[in-house]
Amino acid sequence: MNYYAHSLPDQPPSNWETMAEHEKAVANRCEEFAARIHPEFKSWGNLLGCWHDIGKYSNEFQTYIHKANHQLDAMQDIHRAELSGRVDHSTAAAKWAVDQFGPLGRLVAYVFAGHHAGLPDWDDGHSQSGLRQRLNKQIANFANNAPEDLKFLPKPPMVNLAKLGKHPISPGDHIRQTFRVAMFARMLFSCLVDADFLATEAFMSPIQSKQREFENLSLDQLRDCLAVHIDELTAAAPKTILNEIRKKIREECIEKSTLEPGFFSLDVPTGGGKTLASLEFALRHAHAGSWEMDRVIIAVPFTSIIEQNAQVYRDVFASFGDRAVLEHHSNLEPCRESAANRLQSENWDAPLVVTTNVQLFESLFATRTSQCRKLHRLARSVIILDEAQTLPVELIQPTLMVLEELVECYGCSVVLCTATQPALSIRDRFPIGLRNIRAIIDDADVLHQKLARTRVNVIGGSASHLTNPIAESSSDGCIRLDNEDLADEMAALDRVLCIVNTRPDAADVFDRLGDDEGNFHLSTRMCAAHRLERFTEIRKCLQPESKRPCRVVSTQLIEAGVDVDFPVVMRAACGLDSLTQAAGRCNREGKLEVGEVVLFQTERLPPPGYLRQTAQLTWEPGQSHVD
Image 1: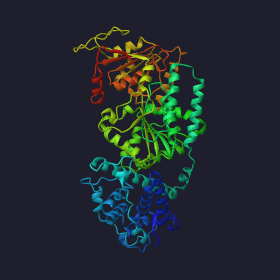
Image 2 (image 1 turned 30 degrees about the vertical axis):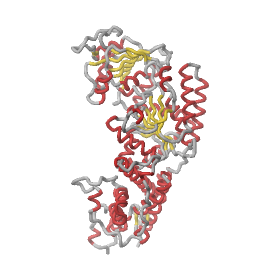
Image 3 (image 1 turned 180 degrees about the vertical axis):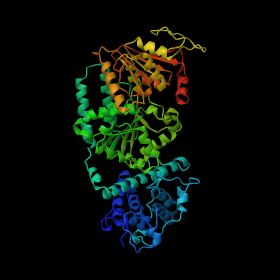
Image 4 (image 1 turned 135 degrees about the vertical axis):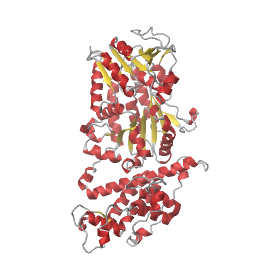
C-alpha cells in the first residue's frame, strides 16, 4: 500500500505525493538550512525532515486524505468513511520522539508538535494545545505502517549548547542556559517549517514554486554598486566641513569592516550620512574575512523612516531593478509589491532586507509558523538596528539576550546605529548589558562637537525670546503654551517645524493655522502614500529657491531619521533622546550659523508612561545651550 502525504484535488492517487517523496524533499531542504546555521546542525535537519509527518502513516489519516479528494473505496470500513475533520498527525512524531529519546526528545517534540499550528507552551492550563497535554493525548496508531528505517532512526546528535557560543555559559547561569536551549529549538523549528512549506508548495503549487527560482544578487555586487554611488556623490559634493566629516565617517566604516563579527556601535551625528555609511560597513564586513555572511538586514523602528530609507537604497541599486532590496513592512504600497517581493517576504530569502523592528523581533519571539519561517535566515547576517535608542525599555532584557545569542552562536554581527547611542554595554555599568561593543567611529564625541548646529532654548521663567509672547505662567510658575499659542507662534515664522506628543494636538494646531498652502500636517494615521506625498511637497518648499512658506505640525513620526531641514524646530516636553532627535531636523545641513530649537510645556502633560517619565526628567526650565 502507498502512503500519501499530500493529494491533488480531483486527481487520482497515482498523481499524489507519497510519504517517501515528501520526507526526502523536506529532509533535503531542512538539512541544507540547518547546516548553513552551523555544521553540527546538519544531521538535526535530516532527522526533523524525515520524522515530522510520521503520523500520516496512520490508517485514519490515509482515510481522511482519500475522503477529502472523493476517492473513498465503497468497501472501506463504515466507521472510517464517516471520519470527519483533520486527523492530528503532528502529535504522533512528538510522542514518538519523547518515547525514544527521553528529555532530549522533548526538545524535538516541541518542533514536531508545532510545525503546523505554531510552537506550543509546555502547559497551557485548561486548553489541550500545550505540549504536556498533547503528549498525553490518544492518537491514531501509525507504528504498524511506518517503514522500519523510520522507526529506528539514530538519536538526535548531541550538541554542547553551553559551549556552542564564543563564550561558554557558566554552570550557574540557568537563565542563559535555558534561553540558549529555547533559541536552539526555535532555530530548528524555523528550518523545519520553511523546508516543509517550500517542499509542499513545490508539489501543490509548482508554478508559484518556480517563481522562487530567481538568482539573488550577491553581497559583493551590492557592495561594488554602493561604492560607485558614494564615490559619485562625494566627487560632486561641495567642499564643506559637513562633507569632510561624512568622508571621514565613511573611511572609518571601511576600515572597521575588517574586524571579526560581533557587536558594533555607529554613533554618527545627525546629518553625518549614517544611512549609506552603515550599509557600506555591512556589505564590506559580510565578506571581509574568513566568515561568509548571507545577507544584510536593516531594521528601523518607524514606517516613516523605512519608506524614506528604502527609497534611498532603491535609488542606489536602481540598475538592478526590484531584485536588490526586499522591503518588508505593513505599510508597503501594493504597487511596489512584485511577485518576487511577496514571495521573498515570507522567508527573507534575499541579500538585502529592509524591515521594521516589529517584523524582526516578532520572528525572534513569536510562535506562529508564518513569523518563524524567516528566523533561520537571520543566522550569518549583518543586522543593522537603525535608531537603536528606540528599543523598548520594558523589553530590553529579552531583546539584548536574543541579540547576544545571534552574535554568540549564529554567526551574526549587530550594528547599533544612531545619533543618540543608548548605554547598552556592561562597561556602561549596565548589569544586563552587552559585552564588547566596538565603536566604528573612534572619536564620536569630537564629531558631535564639530557638527553642533543648533541652540536649544527651554521656555521656563519667561517667554521673552518668543516671537509672540502671549502665553501665561501656570500656578507652578512654568509657562505653558496652548494650541492657540503654538499656532500663533508658527504663523509668525516662514519655516518652522512643531512636534507635539499626541495626534489630537497635532490636528488641532494645524486647524488653527488655517488653510495657507504652506501649512502641513503629518500623522501616523495617514497611509504610506499620503505621507510620502506630504514629505515630497515639504522638501520642495524647503528648497532655497522656493518662495513658499513651510510650517509643519507633526507627531513624533518626523523626529527620528527623516531627512528634512528647518531653521526653527519647536518640541513639546519630551525625553532627552526625543529632543536630540528633533534637533536633528534643525539646521541639518549646517547652512546656518546656528538653528533654533525651542522646548516648551503644553497645557496637558505627555501621555502617561514612558513619555511622561522621560519628559519630567528632562524638564529644567530656563536652560539654554548649543547642541
